Image (cartoon, rainbow, N blue to C red; front, side, top):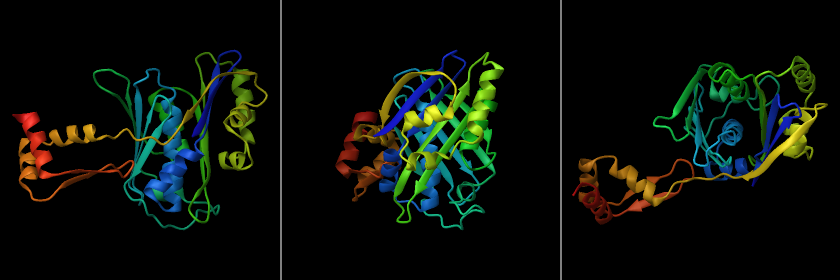
Length: 293
């Protein structure tokens, strides 16, 4: 399970969400078995989606982040519910590129520096809210920060990190998002800037034994805060046979008829959890009769 906490400053002018998503990203790595740099990239995006998910107000709300860069990883997608349970998918799971100039995994090189970050919020309205901003770095945290500034006009700071072991397993993963609320005084802004000036990386903090509470307090060091809440989140896919049946029906009567007349089973694999759903020709025929009779 991953741990997510929220703190607000005593004057109510800013708040921070911090998350330890190590277990979540480990499950993603177990399912998709990506190369190290793709684990780091998709792990960061899933972490961001999880924290942005808990910002949603409705129990049935969800958020989807789609990063369409020009790098070899292709499109990356992360989806979270309002409890922070997230799942992810990447177009190309295996990308082998050199380390960056700092000797770290080159997430920017895998994602690309040109393209768009799309954010889709399903909050129960007739049409989902969709925002799109250009990729500004490909490191993902900076792109999330830019999205909040440009699309939601909310001054924010986002930090994300995934530490991958030499055997490709995940050592730790997590992040934090700080947001300034309307009327945030200059002294609070200055205190936040001072706190962030020398803050260690997310992976340094988590690998040293700090938890989500510790990260949140360190991000707002020397600022009096109150804890709002905490929750547990995990890698969670909401696919089901019923959802797959609905998707098959949506392909149309002609498509279902062709499947039903085939002598082979129809298989559908979930991109997020790799679960395979199998339908015999007779089962497809039953769907056809149920939907289009």
